[in-house]
Each structure stands twice: as structure tokens, then as C-alpha cells.
Image (tube, rainbow, N blue to C red; front, side, top):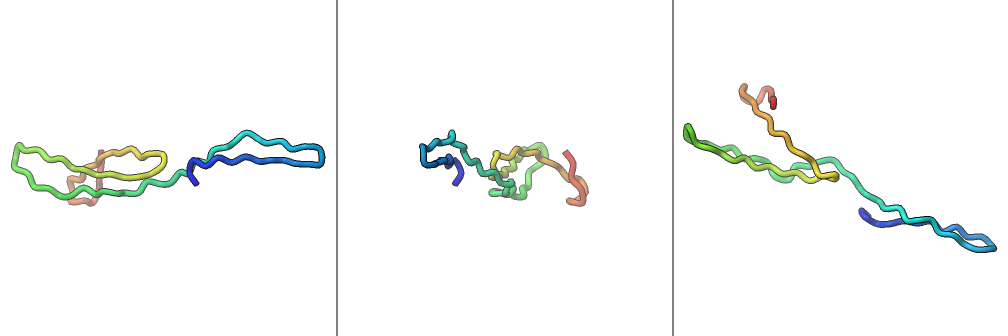
Length: 75
């Protein structure tokens, strides 16, 4: 139903009148669609982690790092 437009029509014995249209926008929470995968790299090498999510409005991303085996994460 996202993007559908709705209007009301009021009618009596004399005539009818129609409201302007209102658009329905459905919003929903982010959902992860792609998880990053673990990687091994040589010293001095580089790695690219990829992740994705869907949601409306479109979610933003903030990568966080753990230096204690996943017990805590920070930016």
C-alpha cells in the first residue's frame, strides 16, 4: 500500500465534495540484508568489510570495532 493515495468523498442530497488526496508512506525498522564476513590479512595489507540493510527511511551505517574479543564495541 506504500505510495497509495486516499481521498474522502462527502455526499448529501444537494451535492458531493471531495478532499484533496493524502499519500500513505509506510516506514519500517532497519533489517540486516548482508552481514560482513571474517577476513585474514597479512601485516600491512588491507581488507574491505561489506554490510547492507534495508529500511524506510533508508538506514545509515556506523562501523564499530571491538578490541576485546567482542565483549564491547566502540566507534
